[in-house]
Image 1 (cartoon, each protein chain N blue to C red):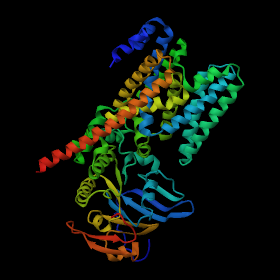
Image 2 (image 1 turned 135 degrees about the vertical axis):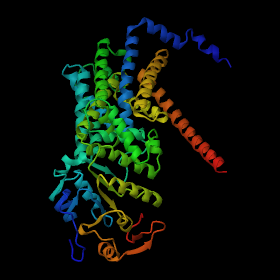
Image 3 (image 1 turned 90 degrees about the vertical axis):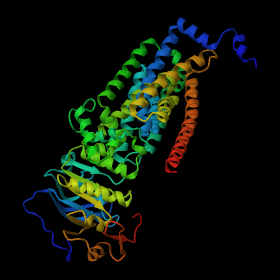
Image 4 (image 1 turned 45 degrees about the horizontal axis):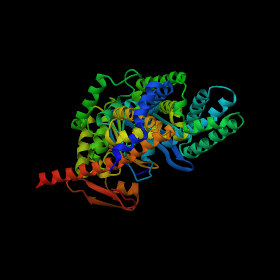
Length: 268
Length: 301
């Protein structure tokens, strides 16, 4: 943690559900993560922000056990990530499947039930009930019989959220859940996440620092190392510290939050 | 137009001739059954091949099989057993390389494709009476399928069906979204290799009917045509199996009268239907979009 960062006030009574210590990772010779220390406590709603190529997605992949740390350690729910991953719900930034795959929304959500019940055979009635319940929770039950390729970006995001929730996770991890949808839906999704936070610990990656700071309890800023994690609202100083000079703040129509726009990359 | 009488001038209708012969000759009945057994594999596993986009991989497995067939022939073992061993071996090899390195698989498939064929050709060249065998391995000869091999084919079908039924959820998950399947604790590597082994078994089933060069067509075309119209994996499997049965039976019937190679006739039939279906499904989709836009405009206005 660098100087000038606000002190993180953590509730010592709560248990960390994700504990990252002294983590280092590199692809080939270029380091992506260095000396990352981060604890996320039970019931927290944490936003992970930082510039593109700052290591956010790599950190998520390490927490999910899809990558192995080269230095340091990660514990999720007191276990190695790979052991804990069944109790973690994950919503990827981009769908990792072909959109023209012949599969219905309900079938997609049902794949989230893998790992429950016997290994052989078909889904059980309880799996189907759980899938419909998860779809109802994200207000997408009417999409159950639609083909996955016919959904809009916002609908798809809800379905992927339902696929994560149907596994009854204790932690929910989302990688830029609103990157591909319009602003109005962005608010809807985060309102939904805020409701889910009543029973789940949530870690959400976003490039939109100011927007998520209105929802999350704490922001962790990652640019190769953890620049800062703070309970304070994000201000100009922090944005400057994280991104450097190439940032201007613009007013965000409708939401009342200021948005930080990093001029060095596109796609916002 | 004198078409109604042209066929009759030859004395018999080719279709009538086929059905008469079917009642008479057991080799033709065996051929028909062999085609139907093969279509079950091409429907069920072909669907996985199409949606997982591993047709090139299936092509590599099919061609490398010649190595196993040639070696088996040379050592006096049943060529089908050699084919099965070679198919499973190359499926595992391709699968393991893809899982370990990810980027190198197309090069490896190309290499295995050629190496397998080269091994086969060397063995066959050193075995007496090779020419007819080589031709029937490459292009199939459904009329020469011995009756006892129907049992072998039925056994392979049973293995395919039981495996897919038991592990349908996992195979679907691995085919649909490998990363998510891994996060749900599914042993992705195991099921990926299992899927490739099922492809290998299907290749051996189909080699009987159309030969190893044409296998890839029967493995992909029926499922691809089904995919134009149905949008569930189970539906695709059912329609592709029925289409496979139709292509093999109709190909056999069409080829019998004029004495054409049955395998090639089946593939041309499947290929023609595929082309027509691809154009038709596109036209239908475009019309649907236009109609929807019209309805939306009327509702808006």
